[in-house]
Image (tube, rainbow, N blue to C red; front, top):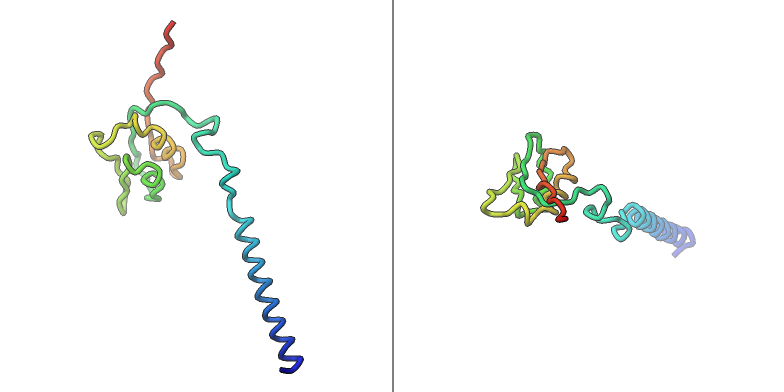
Length: 122
């Protein structure tokens, strides 16, 4: 092997290692660090309460967020999202998932009504 061939092979190996290192750095620093993120329901302005009713306004873009977050309530088809019949779920039991789906909806078409707050006993 000549010095030129050796130099070429060394350059290719070094260049490949450099590209690999660059890709790795971009991947690591480009990713959100989940351990540092506050869960949505723990944020101060996250609505708290028991959901009484849920519905979806027209305009859904079928992103599947709601069915991923709360599959017991939302059913997504190729063209739209549907609320499952109330006999199959109880809104009260899925309040957290319903509110999280509504807050996370990119087009804000998921709507809900919270139960009226109970008065404190005196």
